[in-house]
Structures are given as C-alpha cells and as structure tokens.
Length: 354
Image (cartoon, rainbow, N blue to C red; front, side):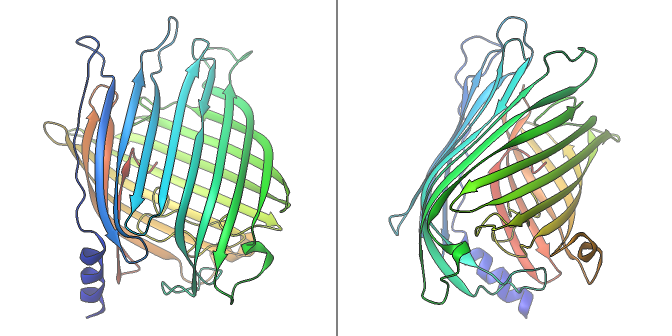
C-alpha cells in the first residue's frame, strides 16, 4: 500500500516531460546545438515549464576536446524562476579546462532533519533568492603529455536571501553571502567525457570559505569504467564529501538527488560527512536510444567512523537515454529508482550521473 501511494505521488508530481532534439550543422560533421523543452509539476512549484539548450564549439587548432555550454531556464506557475548555465571550456590547445557553473534563482525547497536517520517527511520549507557561481580552472602546464593529470584553483561564491517559517531561525538558515577559494587535483583517463566506457576519473578538491559563514569542504571523487560485451559497459563511482565549521544550509555533505543518489530531495540525509557509492550497467540500443540499470548506496554522519555504522540507504533503478549529440555521446536522461525499497524517485536531466 505504501508503494502504491508513492507511485501515485510520483505520477501526480510529474505531468509530462518532453524531449526534442534539434541540430543545426555548420558542416556535415559537426552539430552546433541541441534543445530540450521540459514541463512538469510538483506541489511546491505547481506547473513547471522551461527549456534546456546545449551549445557546442569546434576545437581550436591543436585541441581535441569540444567545448560546450549548457543552459537551463525554468519558470513555475507560482512565479518562481531558475536560470543555470554550465560553460565547459577547453582553451590554449586543451591546456586549460574550465568546467564552471552560474545560477540565478528564486525557488523553493524543503528542510529535513540532519543525519542519515532523517525521514522523507520534511520538517519545514523555504523560499530562497540566490546568486551562485563556481569557477574551477584546471591546467596541465609542465605536465608531460603522456600523463592524464591536471591541477588548478577553484573559486566559489553565493549570495542568498531566505524566507523561512518562524520555527527555523538558526544562523545556518539566515541570509548572507560567502566566498571561497581552494584547489583541485584531477587525473582523467576516460575514453569519452559524456558516455565513457573505458578508463577512470579521480579528483580531490578542498575549498575554504569566508564571509557571513566560515567553513571548509573537501571532496574525493573516484570513478572507473570498463566495457563488457554487445555495447554494454560498467560504470562505478565512490564519492566522499566533508563540510566542517559554520556550515550554511545547503552545504552540508549529502546526496544532490540528480547525479549522486538520484531521486531524493536536496537536503535529505545531509550531515558533516557523506559517502556515496554507485554501480551502473549502460548499453547503447538503436537510433539515438540507450538504457541503464543502476544501484546506489549512501551513508552520512558527524564523523568518518559513523559512515560505517547503522543501516545505509540504497536505491535500485533503471533509466532511458536519448542522444542529443551522437558524435559527442551526450544524452538527455530519465531515471526511475526505488529508494530503500519503498520510495519512488524520478530524475530528468542532461548528461550522465557520473
């Protein structure tokens, strides 16, 4: 009965998701852009409508990677809006890689109990006006061309203006701004950045923040890919995150619900540290279609030892893929997951989860 109620909630929350692939070619071999209109429904926002656009740029002379810019614009029946752009640029013959993100939003969200013991039932809600930017600059100057290694700096900043109910007036929910700077180390030997079937990716990032909040975050991201048979491959990932200090709401470690542990609301099961593991079987089908079967596990807690205590959360599911750019193997994806054996999650987004 509980599963039926969740299924009913799922289909009442998602009215329709439309996918349209539009390609404009400057020549026979290079696709300039793809477009993806989207419509959906949730109790917090009512009807959502918008579009996703991906622009592609030819590699400059001496480079091999295609630069791209993802643009997502959403509006709601409640007069909320969200604009997000993710320029991923390769410059100076691929010696510099800038996978940045910029967001402007007036959106709503839910507040959950802290820690992995928290339930799916929210304990509050908020409206937030936010300006956000994160700009990593990865470089390989001085690194031999045979070594897949990059180093770089990371800048991140956000200004937020919150509206919360009277029960939530703790400082971590207050208005304010913070800015941070840090470093990133990356080793990337994937055969394709959008749909890898062979190789690995490893990165470590640390950022120190100041302003109205003073805290620091660390993140270790490990991924591996290997082919099987009949255009099937395995992708595996482990992500460890830590947030310590005067951490504002939204920056605690936990799942994002879109890429790491799909189908849950942001803020659920957040704590000082989080560990997320993922395993996915991927297969290309026919035309522009592909499919996945995946499993995900996670635990969070106030310290590292707590990540290996108590029961962990898990999810199993499957997804469909539509290639928006066949040459770059870039997909729009829809994932349906069963979380902890009783909750249904749905994710519609661009690019793979990891």
